[in-house]
Structures are given as structure tokens and as C-alpha cells.
Image (cartoon, rainbow, N blue to C red; front, side, top):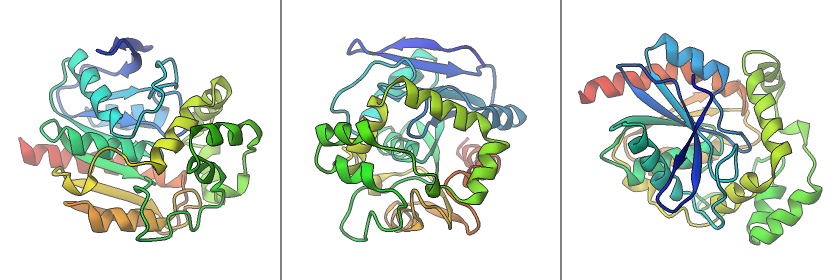
Length: 278
């Protein structure tokens, strides 16, 4: 995995990108959670290498060296990713996103239908809707509630926000202490650098996304932990009922982090779907 490169976008912004390169098979573009730096995480690199997958990760605006994009919506990720793929000489690719990365992966599928071959979201949030109690079951919904009042309110909330360890299950904590320790370290690094990426993510989640997930034509795999206290299972249920060509892997004993253990087999799922398209 390269140390990272800056890709210049048409509007003058810079996006920090990481690319394993070299693989002749599937290219997978990873959408990181909130907050993360966008740097590649060890379990993803290992799983991709074992499957001959070219793994590309990038930092959303205000994360990990990427230029801020004030007022961005979820859909803006598709334009950024399309330009990143062009810069790397990538035509078609699959997308995978965890937690806050899930909506951005779905946006790429909705807006880049000729390029995205398959989608996986893990513990991904659904668009704000009144068809179910969108905040119910979240152990700490303060950030999203503040975002409903606008960016200034969300930024003000962040000034005094404290991490609530109860949002993670014992299985989550065990995962962070083990296989996915790189995720915890990366999240701390992103949080210490700036709150802006997290604030902008939350505001984007509670506003119109700028894309219609009901129009996605690529196959979609939703992976959801039954014990998730950050993004409850009702979000995956809504996505399953509203996103065409979607299927749900419900992992009853998993929480928000431990569900990431499904990443390797989810990659297998994407490889199979890509082979069916060739």
C-alpha cells in the first residue's frame, strides 16, 4: 500500500488517496466511517491481498488531509470518487462502506451506475425518514439531534461532547482490542486532528442526501449487527425494503464494530458479483 497521494479535483480541492495497485481482478473502493483519516486499515489490506483485490481508500473532505467542502451532501462523494477513479485509471469498481461510509457508498452506486459493480454497507445509516423512528435504539444520538438544527448547532455540540463507551458492546471492545485495533487508533487520530469531518458527516446524514437509493441498479449487500447500539438494525431493515437488488446479512450477536469481521466474506460476495458481470 502506497503512503498516500493527493488527487486534485476539478474544483481545486485535494483528496488524499491510498491505492494498493497491481491487482488484475476486482477494484474495491472503501468508504471510511466517522471519524477516520481514510488511511487503509490492516484487516482490509490483508483481506484484499488474499483475494487479489485492488484496494483504494480515500479521505472525505476535512479528513486525513483532504480539503474541506463546507455544506457537502452525501451525494457529493460520488463526484469526488468518480474523479479519483479517473485519476487512477480505474473504470469499473465495487464500493464498500462501514458506518458513516455506508451512505457514501450507496451514493456512488446511485449516481455512478455505469461504474459501480456492487455495494456492501456494514452498519450503514439510512436516509432520514419518518417511516420509522430513525433515532430509536441509538445509545448516544446527541450529535445527530444537534445536526438537525444545522451545522452551527452540531459544531457547538462537538465542543463539549464526550465519548460514551456504552455505545459499543463487549464484542465491539474485544474487536477493537484485537483484529481491528488499527481502526481505533485511526479514529483517535482523526478526532484529534479536527472535528470538522465528523460534523459535516452528521449534518449531511440528516439532510436530503442528494441521491435516490431506490434507483440503485447494482447488487447491494447490507451487513448489520443485531446488537448495534450506534446504527440500530431498523436502518438496515429500511434499506432492505427500499433499495432494489439488496440482501441482508443479519449477524445477531454483533455490534457496531464486531460486524466488521464480515469484511472478508463480503469481499468474496463482491468478487462473485463482479465475475457474473464479466
